[in-house]
Structure formats: structure tokens, C-alpha cells
Length: 199
Image (cartoon, rainbow, N blue to C red; front, side):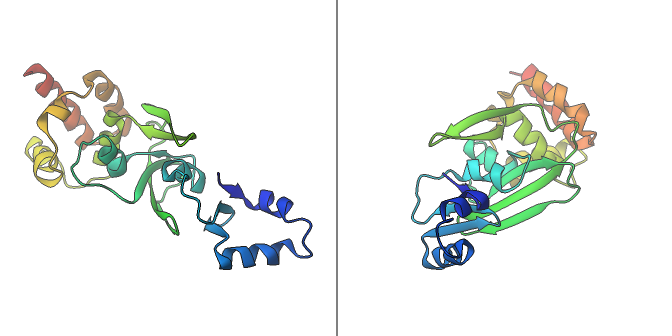
């Protein structure tokens, strides 16, 4: 679906100046430059932004608000693709002709767990499970230090449904929580255990 710079240069090798030809193709819209070294055919509609997210910047997997929206945990549709990465020590943003992509740093200790592989239009992508996406979101959310503030975040700020949260896998969150080393996620694990006990 997408092509890198080396592939396009090989395809254009019979032109006197492949680089000049590529520049003209970009200007005419025959090729769309997603970011440096990543290209899509002009007019292409079957590409997957979820798959592109992992190509634009990686290693990474889809998480945070975009994943929560896909899982219908939050009512708003999230247009910008949000992903988790690690060992970068800073967040990154890419505004491209096919959309905006945000990448947030996570501790390496939590990165590999609760990530699944899926496909869209035959193109693979990695995405956090609902439990991981919620933990990731809480990791980058500041100002939550009490159960009351956590409940306010869930039900007032993000308008989540109690039933959706209570249906999450308690064991998965219990495993993940200590890896983040953040009080907010420990609170979430405790909250979830209480919600499960009251079911």
C-alpha cells in the first residue's frame, strides 16, 4: 500500500532524474508524501491510518483516546491517531496529508504487554487491549490522586459507562498496574477490584 523512498527510486530508475520525477509526482498529486520517506499513491482510499501509525513512527501501538473510542469506551469519535511508544523520552506529533498522529512515551517495562495484532483492509496494526489503553491514558493524565478524582475523570470528564469499566479484566489491570509505578493506575486497579466485587 505505502511505498518507501528506495522503492520509488527503483521504480523511477529509468528517468533521467528520478528525484526530479518524484518531486513532480508529489506536486501533481500522483503521489502523496505522508512524511519523509513514506509515500502513498495519489487518490488511494484503501490505506489504513491505523497501519500507517506504526510505519510513521515506531516501535509503537495504537492506544489512549483513539483506542478507547474504537472500543466505544468514550462517546466522542477521535480523529487523530494516538499511539504509545517507549525509549524516546519525549512525545512526538506528525501532521500529515492523511491525518494527525500523536505518540506518547511510556515506561519500557509496560510497553510489551496487552497489545494485540489486528488488520484493516488487509493491513496489520498493533493496538492496546481496552485494559491497557485505559492504563496508558491514566498514565499521561495528571491531577488524579483520590478515588473521587478518578471517578470524576471516568464519569464526568470522559463520560464512560460504569458497566463498561466493570466488565474489564481485573487480573490484567492488577498485573499491569505496578509496572507503571504511578499512583493513579494503582488507584484504578483498586477501584476495578471494588467494582467487580459489587457486581
